[in-house]
Length: 338
Image (cartoon, rainbow, N blue to C red; front, side, top):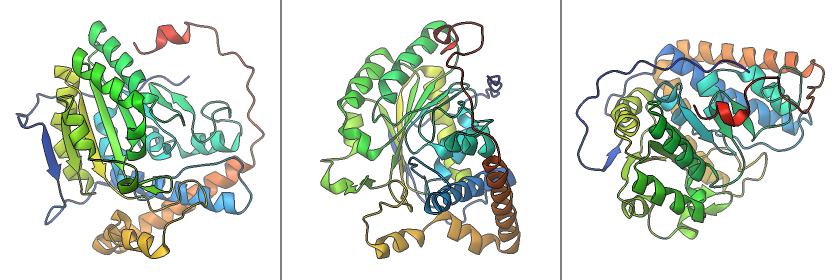
């Protein structure tokens, strides 16, 4: 298994806002993402588009859930969560790619080819690597995050557990049990909510009474809402929040009010195409294409070409093999989550 990434440097925290709830909107003159962030954004966008096209062409089996439109969420958080425990969900390709920058290994996993992250047995949804875990079970990550966070607190590891969930997951009772324990025990848990306004095919307004902010407030947990998509501003706003969770063992919920451009999975989008086009009008990709012009389009074309080459190379590989037992060494439970 690949070694865990080094711990990021810890710098002194800036004075934190005392109010537990705040919102970030689009800035008047938003900063442009750096080259690394642009590459990460475009890699996720075109990886997801590639998967949908390969499914349509009969080159992939099973299912997949893309994060089209939400790519900026994991990209903004990636450097803040380096070396932490990250629990993802069924829509987790972007979370994985932002942290590991490994489209080849992920595509091999999805295709069941040699070089796959998990020997081809995890597929699109179930990935484990160096403190990262994704599954397709709604709500399961929050109780697990609380347990990992409690272990981090008791061992003094200086780490936190971050769990990515969608707005639809707030219909699961495990969410509230986990929030209750996180608040009572004051554990370093960060809940990242990708609130895209629709749970599979049901609009949030038809399946959620009240708001996530109000539900979080009932437990006395800090809540932050992010309504923009500009990576530098988001990262600046969340740096003290993440530091507070890690160093003060103060759980927090960060809601990204975002949108999903793609289908729930593969080709099952039940929305009016006009509604999706309206969402595209405010998409980060369209904005950056217009703002950055030719340099952005050149980078965009290169990443598209690179991923096409990755697909051809992975497709030519033999099937992945798995013996059913891991390498000799410490047991999994001894390695996780120290």
